[in-house]
Length: 533
Ligand SMILES: C[S@@+](CC[C@H](N)C(=O)[O-])C[C@H]1O[C@@H](n2cnc3c(N)ncnc32)[C@H](O)[C@@H]1O
Image (tube, rainbow, N blue to C red; front, side, top):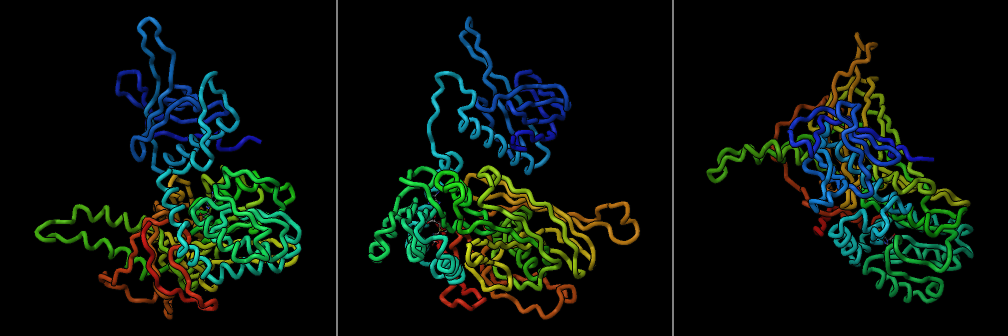
């Protein structure tokens, strides 16, 4: 079955021929076909046919790109000419999605051997290196190579305890079987699998942690003889046999951050026998609109600094708008009170046993809710859970608000323009996640409140609000869950005060930023700041 993305079409605000010498441009389309990409002018006339395996596509700006195609050469003049076009997208979201499809095309072509010219040298970069910026990968594996960060994950007892229970209660799935631990870290899940009677476990770990895992495993001699640690990426290493079971903990914030799910899926395709089991097998992203006046004001207040007209004699106000947008582009990570949700949640399923790796490059989730209360909606709250579909006892690991807090907490995308809803009113929208090469995603969120009361039959949209966020740059707001005694809409508007700023400026992308301390039943996260990496 052909993939849908191979037929994607993008409307362009304008397109111009690079070679015409004139600066004339007109609206157009970028149409992906099974053979490559067509750039059309005025929606029907083909300006240029692009062979994506040999063409070069560059991003010139947030909504502008250029596409250059090698054409024939003039033997007499000893020159070669290129054709091409400049593309102006309607918005950044389209531009990002377009480049995502181009990347997929280039990758697919290489994988299938493509229609490369004779003599073309194809470097065999690994799947991981092809899509991930090397500086990001370096920081990422450096982070996981440190014992303190592995300890932090081990000390999330909700997480580690649930993995332990899922393995031990489902011994039958491990007993006498070959297991691969995908991203073994300290080797803890390999040791659990060995405790459950695995015949042999291959613990694959790319970071320097592999050496510590080896040490930890050697320190448990009754299990060690059935575990082999292999240092390398699951995308690259070779194993001597196929696996009956894959075990892994590849979940990041919002489930998909870190893009490790892709490695889990690649490991499935490379190592798992056709009827093999995956622990976990399924993940779900849950979403619901929320109302949180305190949070909104706190974020808006952060930019107030830039409203000073006399900061040591300098007027800062020209940067206020940029700073304001910047703060609203950070998804908020904290544990919130579930009473802040204004509608029952909906969820999006990711089946790790079936999904294709490429399907994780772009995740598009249509949203539809019915408000249960009248409120000012400040954005979308998200969390995830995963299922260990053991044949004896199926078990869920949840990061839901109100459940015992994990080191993932929950994630909220906050709109700079809240929308008002009445009880019973429909809220629609879209959560669009586009993977980027720094092991994370750009998040595009739109929420709309449909017309209410007279005139609703016409189906008009009354209010709509959108935002763009970078999942790699979250705001870790490790406040205690608030006791929200009053409904938010009954509260007095808060003055825009300078609240105490506990913002942790973090470059980090890992799941293990701020960890729960050893209090398995506590639902209150203990504040702990992490180091930037
Ligand atoms: C979230 S940690 C989990 C560690 C351990 N399994 C646990 O549950 O405590 C993910 C681990 O996977 C490793 N990892 C991530 N991507 C990998 C890849 N493509 N190949 C091998 N290891 C990888 C990281 O270095 C990190 O140690």
